[in-house]
Length: 137
Image (cartoon, rainbow, N blue to C red; front, top):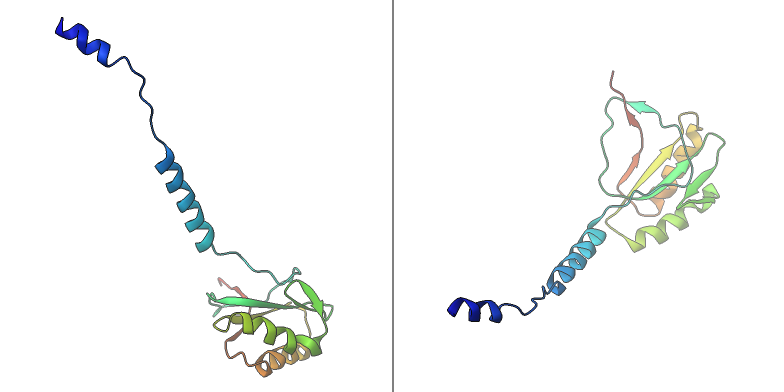
């Protein structure tokens, strides 16, 4: 008789509370979304020159591209080379710790790249790099 009473008391349905698990999944989702690093692009494809001493720049927030045709792209927009300083000042004010990377095409004009580099330095940015692919030879 004792076993029959025990069986009758366990016939109720049990529910699993999954609310804490859903909360934890959303917290993890928010954590990974906030900490994800997104690749910034200059807005145009270029052929980078190669260099044996190329190193990876970790904090590149402003990307400037100089194409073979003499176009300058900042923040996915084609700009006049003389207005690079104003664009860089605005973007650098949003993130003062960030660096500038100049993506110069392998066939671009050296004078234009130097002009862009000068405009970036006049904008007050000290951390400037020119992008290159690492040569394995």
